[in-house]
Amino acid sequence: MIVAVTLGTLALVTAPATAANAEVFYDEGGCVVQQVTDGAPAGGSQCAGVDFGGTSMGQAAFMGANLAGANLSGSKLQAANFTGANIEGANFTDAQVDGADFTDAGILPGTITAEATDANGAPINFAPVVPAGLTAGDCMIVDVPVASGTVFPIGDSGMVCKFSSSNGTAIAVVKIQVTPHPEATEAPTPLFTDEPTTTGTTASTRQPTDWGLVAAAGGGAVVVLALGVAAMVISRRRPAIVAGEDGAGEESAVEPDDDEEPKAPGA
Image 1: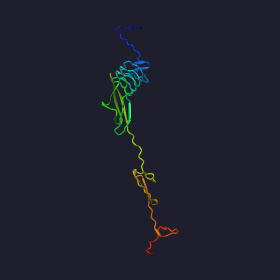
Image 2 (image 1 turned 135 degrees about the vertical axis):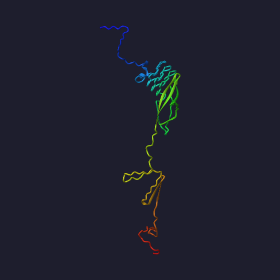
Image 3 (image 1 turned 180 degrees about the vertical axis):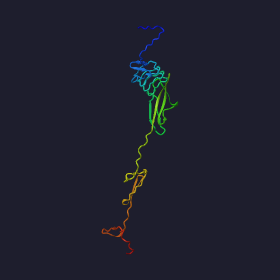
Image 4 (image 1 turned 180 degrees about the horizontal axis):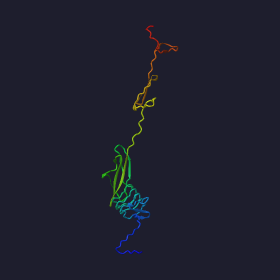
C-alpha cells in the first residue's frame, strides 16, 4: 500500500543521533587547536613556531601545548586556557587575551614551595618572565597587592597575578606552599651520665649540667672535674721521724704502731 503525503500532513522522520564534531580553530601542519569544551588534543597542541596570523581562537584549549616561538600577535584569545603550555619566545603583541589563563605557562611557576624560617613563615620571592606583547601587572591575594619577598604563613596560599596586552588582561594562579621548619630531634649529649643501675628498671632523671664534681676516695686520691679542667690532689700522711740513723747513715722513717700504748715522758 502506498501512502501519499500531501501538504499540511506532518511526517516524522527518526534518524540515529550523531556525536557533534569538536570545533577546530586551527589544523595545519600537525598543529591542532580546538575549543576548551572539547579538551586539548592528546599530548597538547604541537604548534612550535607556527604563525597563527591573527586567527580567532577564543576559548582555545592550549593546555600543555608547545607554542615555543609561535606568533600569536593580533590573535583573538579571549578566555583561552594556556595552563602548562610552553610559550617561550612566543609573540602576543596586540593579541586579545582578556580572561585568558596562563597558570604554570612559564611566566610564573604554578607552585612555589619554601621552608619556614621561623614561626611567622617564609619570604617568597618571584619574578614574572613575560613573553613579547604582555606586561606583568600586580599579584594579589583577595585584592591585596603582594610584592616579591612578602612573608607567607605556614600552609598553602593562593596568589593571582595579572598580565596584560594592548587588548585585555590575563591571569596566572600561583600556589604558595610554606612547610614548617624541622625541629631538632636529638637531645644534646650530656657531659656526664649516671652509672648503670643493677636493677635495670630505674632510669635516672638527673639533667645534664655544664659542670660536674666527681670524687673518688680510693687510695686517698680525690679527682676534681670542674668546667672541663681536671686537677688531682693526692693527700698523704707524713711519716713520723725517729731520731737515729740506719746503716746507710740516713734518718729512718718509722710508721707509728697504732696498737702501741703511749709512753710517759722520760720512759
